[in-house]
Length: 457
Image (cartoon, rainbow, N blue to C red; front, side, top):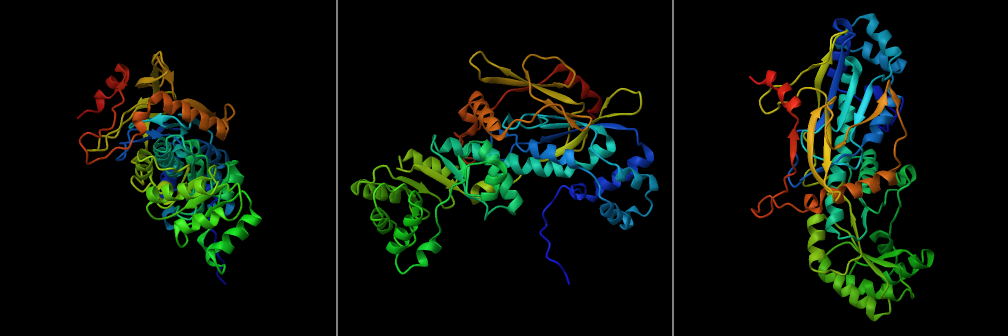
C-alpha cells in the first residue's frame, strides 16, 4: 500500500535537494578536473518592480544546509539507478560516501540593504561541492529576501504601528511559511500567528479568533461573551455579520476590553465607526486590529487618512510578495583555479545575462552622520575605504564564529534601514512619473573594471 509522504526536507536528505544537472556535472568534474577550485557568487541581476533595494535574508538556513550536507547510502543507490549515471566511474560513488562541504562561505550579514549585481554570498571550494549547492542556496535566499524586502516596505507604511504576519495558510507550503515568518520578523514585523515558527524561532506569537467561532453559537453576543470568559485579554473578531453591531456586542462583554479585529469591508470607515463605539462605551484603551488582504499601499492610505487603527496583520500579500513574487537571483562562476596556478576570473557574456568576472568585495562608505553614501564593488583582495560587507562565515566547512541571534539580526536590520534612508522603502508607483525610485550610487573599482575588459567582445 502506498504510504502518505510529508514532503518535508530533513538533515538526512538535503543532498538530493538539487537539480539533476548539478549532480551530473559533479560526476563529470570528478573525471576530468577533480582538483579544480572554483568561486561562485550569488546575486540579483536586477531589482524587481517597486523595489529600490532588497533586504538580504536567509544566511542562517544556508549555514545549516552546508553543515549537514551529506549523502546517505540509499540516496547514492538511487542515483546509481538513474540511466544518466550509467557511465559514472566507481570513484564518484566512493567520493559521495564521504562527501561533506569543506569550502569557504562569505556573506553579507542578514538584514543588510543590498542592490543589483552585488554578491550576497560568495562560495569557494572544490568545483564539485560549489556546483552541487547552487539550487538550494538560490531557493533559500530567494524565499527569505523577497519577503524581508516586502516586509520592510510594509513596516514603513505602518508608521511605527505593530504589524503581524498571518500568512501560514497562504504561503507556498508550511516550510515557506516558517521562512516567511522569520524574514518578516527580521525586517521589523512584531510577531506571527504561526505557532511552529514561534516555537522554532522564539518569535512572539499572536492570534485572535475565527468567524467560525461566532457562527457556531446561537448568537454573536453569546459567542463573544463565551470567548472572553475563556480568554479575558483576547482580541474579539467583530465583523462576522455587522461590524458596528459586533463592536457594540464586544463592549457588552465587560470592562477593559483588550482589542477588537476587523477583517473586511471599508477599513477606514469601519475603524472610525468602531472607535466611536468603543469610546462611547468606556473602552477608550481598546485597540483596533485590521486584516484582510492588506498591503503596504492600503496601509499607507489608511495612515494618510488618519484611520484609528492600532495594529495591522498581513497574510497573502506578504508571504507570496504578490506584487513582486520572485527575484532574478543567480549563482554564477566568477573564478577558477587549477593546481598551483593562480585564480583566473571568468565571466558569462550571453546577451542580457552578462556577469562580472573575479571574486568581489563590497565596500559601503558611510557619511559623518552615519548614513550610507555609496558602495564600491572591488576585487576581493583590494583594500578600499568603507565597510567591507562580505564577511567570512565558514572556512574548511566549519563556522569561523558564532552566528548572530534573530533579535540581533532584527536590530541590525532596523539600524541599516535608517542608515540607508526611508526613501528606499517608499511606495513606488510604476505608472506615475513623479514616483521614481531613489538611485543609490554604486561604483566599480578601477581594478575590477579593468579585469572585465578581456571579456568585452
